[in-house]
Image (cartoon, rainbow, N blue to C red; front, side, top):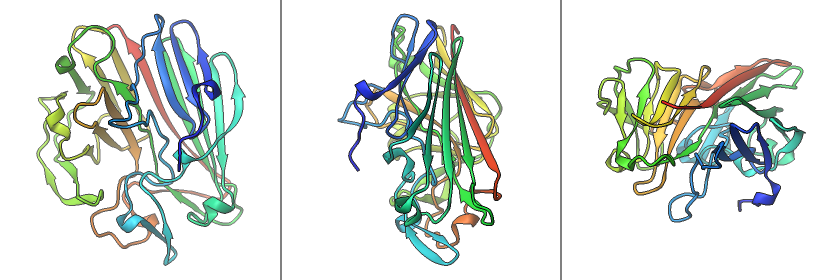
Length: 299
């Protein structure tokens, strides 16, 4: 589906220290700038990828055969789901906070037979952008099954004069496990690989992403720090998501740090959607909240 929403449609919030702009199409964070107007996110160069920070719902990654199975019935479902292609209602648009919402309709129920309300709230607090997602189940008698993921693409290099090759991502905790790999069809391959971490540090270079994303599933850390060692950095915290993807296309001017509560299907998966790794259940009348913060630190 074609992208909608020009820059003139974006909702802008800020406080003089940090400013953000959100496209109601997909409730996508589309710009994050510092006090001097320097852009901290992707340039969205169409030679590589025009996305900026899509919301991944109700699936993360690619379902096997682009199909999910619910109560034995097959439904078509594209990679990363449909929320990123839908127009969200603007619920609130204040100086420092904006809220967007998407609800099920006939089109979503044809491919995902659940009632839901997906609300995404953005708030600037000092040098921090906080994003809180609420996934609510309005049904009276049916459990909602879903996955959710963030997919923000940050500028690589950051706009502070440090070389691209000096940038790194530092994990908050030790990550001793092997990494998942992406199969040719976009699902999770059966074999894992050794981690490229140097202690807790991932030294960024294009070669790391020659075969798609790096996937920690599970990830022990609930925060990472991104940037060059001696300049301003981004602290990215994700307290509610047990998986993490890091990705770029070699040569692009961005790196994606992607906290996930869900993952692509295991290679050849033909089971029920509810049994997939990372899928969560929301009871009738209940909701689930998933948050992420991005803080600009002086390093």
